[in-house]
Image (cartoon, rainbow, N blue to C red):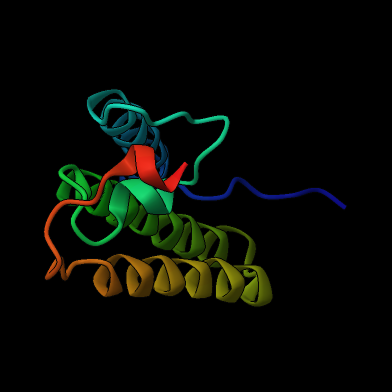
Length: 117
């Protein structure tokens, strides 16, 4: 079975790759800005959690990743016609967006990240 190219649209390819790159750059930059954060010991949710000083950066990175997943879902659907694969990618994007939106409220003020470790 010969697979067709995923998409002829360079825009979808750029959005797919750029979204993932923006996500990881955002997470690493945010982790470097928070004193006491360790990527080996802590989760990303500490960076995006309520009261985090870098929450907006990490939430934006999460939304960029969701855009990448949606672009990939569209490319897979258009190029391969793989509806199930595209549906799973789109569901993952919706889940990322829900988590990002859920984490936007910071009513309790900044958290002490070192106390959470």
